[in-house]
Amino acid sequence: MSRERLIADGMVLAVLLLWWLASLGMPEFILPGPWPVAKTLFSLFTTPAHLADTAASAARVIGAVVVATALGGVLAYLPWRWPLFEGIVHERIKPFLNSFPSVGWAILAMVWFGTTDLGVMVVEVAILTPFCLINLSEGLKELDAELLEMSASFTRRRRRVLLKIVLPMLLPYAMSAIRIAYGVGWKIALVAELFGVSSGLGAVMLQAQIVSDAATVYATCLAIVLLFLAGEKLVLDPLSRVVAYK
Amino acid sequence: MATRGRAGRRSRLAAHVFTAGFLLAWQAYSLAVEPYVLPGPWPVALRLWEFLTTFDLFKHAFASLAHVAAAMAASFVVGTGLALLAHYVPALRLAVHGRLSPFLNSFSGIGWALLAIVWFGVNDLTVIFAISVVLTPFAVINMREGLDTLDAELLEMSASFTRRRGREFARIVVPSLLPFVFATLRISFGVSWKVTLAAELFGGRSGLGYLFNLARQNFDMALILAVIGVIIAFVYSADRFVLAPLQARAARHHAAAA
Image 1 (tube, each protein chain N blue to C red):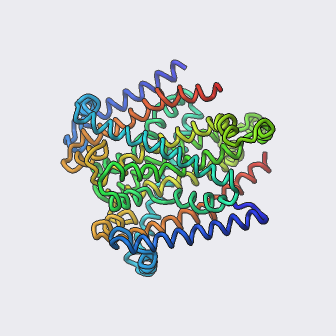
Image 2: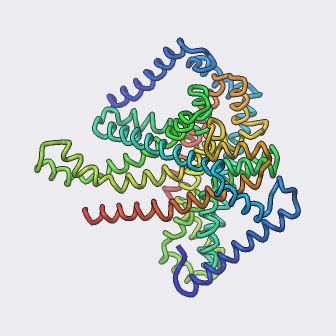
Image 3: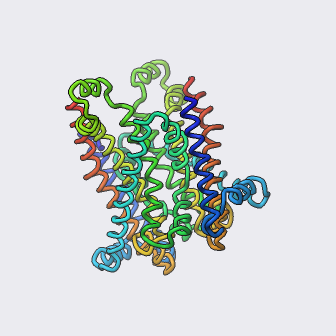
């Protein structure tokens, strides 16, 4: 194990070293060295102006994940409760959302909502919803039928069954829906923000690309990697341990 | 899949009513707003016909397809190579699965596209590179899954028949991995379409993403919607009628062999 670790961390170091060596022979606007990139990366989390952009992106991603999970949940619930919706949700809405190109949403949202927060959120929600829908319908399909039958013999109130039985049993699936949506969310955050929004990491990156400030382009990419990993390790992993425990 | 019987028929009917309602709502709303905000279904259908019959427009679909195919091939080779490397050289396992693959997996596709523009300029290489890098972690993760589930007893038996590792690899390992190969290709195909357009929009001189950019600059919403329609139809039918049956067949074959 320790040898594996040595090789893995050695590889990371070797890549950084190679990067540094390569950057010596290249102009700054093509390949800046690790040090200027690290400095810019640091400033993305510390300078107030940059921090506002980072926070704006993070808030949009988190908001979109929450809305998409709720929307996906409702869409998954409809055909489960009323089979009449089966065709509408699984044969129309799901494949439609699932194969809709994300850039298409970005362009449409820009025309429809202008360059606003709402536009970015709509794009992210539209892209994330099918992932949540697929996971949550899978969860509803796997629900324990005997447990449901038993609960029906205890109470007639559907809402009670929903709250006490269905939702707790769905939690692990909701968790994996949130996990997937969170990962995809960060990946498409930039797509959603690239078209003329004035705040967020996408805006910072596009601005940097226009003035060929390569260090900032690299730093924004790495900032997203860091934010993604931080959210997963600090929030999602502990949360799914809690959920799994129940 | 729609259920059979009366409930299934009613659900299918509801789905058709939903489609008709959707088109109707679109038509009604398009009358209320400017055509550059939302053109109605009919102008979009006309533009779609024009797209399908004009070579200068349609060639972009071929360009995108070529980008996707090249990137799928490249990422499959690289991803499988990495997964095999980690499998057969255990010392590298953490380096591949604990460092490289999570890094690639959390790196934004647009980020790769913008970096590739800086490195390679605006051309096909940039587009293919950006898509390939995004697809590679999917291939690594899937092929690892396959290698982890290799049947140890089967391998042991094969070792008693031959000492040649190459023979064992071709006769036992590759066939066992086949279902995972199809799963990888299917996932790659689905993801690649989402990245390809973004990569072409920023870093390409051809392809549907490039066409998007042209149409966006000309406020040609009808063309944008027509292209989106083409993509949805293509992605959906390729997945449903080609990749899903292929994968099911590979899985059956695997089940029969095991």
